[in-house]
Image (cartoon, rainbow, N blue to C red):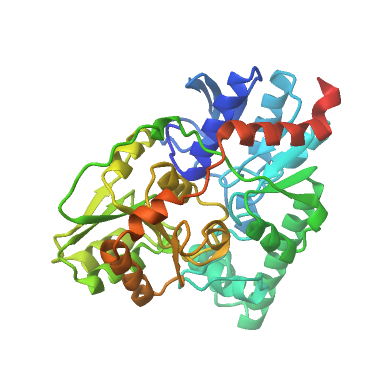
Length: 420
């Protein structure tokens, strides 16, 4: 923060503030992309009392696929920060746009490393185990990776890397070889972390299938700061208001929700989409496609980017929250925020969403990607007497960030307690 406001960033922010409140010292090391600042420049500042060290990096030295995985200059900058003061533990929340061997830099200084796997970036450069065509990769297949990743980085694979003078069979062999090396590196790196944490049982199973020993992974469910949601008063409306809140990306299935809402064709309902439609790797036109799909439907509103402080007000203006994700959500903060706001929720029956929601009890589930099934769910929420109120009243208790912090501190103590 404040440059990026995704779910992981908000989680880390809340966790760091809670650690500080409990009397611990926290430093957040992260990456920025300021075109006006020199490459690898360090900026230091505080956000809500939390110390932030931001390394500027815009990939100016990245010349091949291996460069997005390991970067000696970023590792050196991180190592210099570790040398500035005495730390007890390094907790890695994400390494995208940094360097995976920051883990080895910490271990070289004798520091224990705990890592939360918030998505599947460790083992999938797209982070969500989905191809550009939205095919969900239940398991890693190097041959499939070899057809997927050239769409992102055409200059680092196949023809774009080797040129037409290299036979196609040789280009394919080189692609498979570098991808095999990548997965070998990732599996080995995860094996060197003292403790791996996943926020859901399903996410743990995904990494077990990737080859990580089950005993190395501990499930610690994320916690949320519930204070901003206390005392929310629902604003009245003559229409039933469905809402989507979060990153507007293809993997989040917003197009499925719009399709379902258009098919619903119910003048007594509205759909509000909150969030920024940014680029998803090489896919840059998703927002434009959503608006085209919604063209002519005045009851669909796109509200764009919002701040975390706006969320209680946004949720107070909805009657139901829809989470139509297509990928294996590793946890889903948005789902819990809906519950904190006392909203009925509808979610895809997939991954950690299926794990969290008891269908018909505290929410409604529908097959991921099935707009017709979602349309029926929307109709039920808007018109089945008492359903929305019953689901909202039966919402499960959401863990607090204080509980989450204490669980993590106990995990740290297993490795770092004797260092203090």
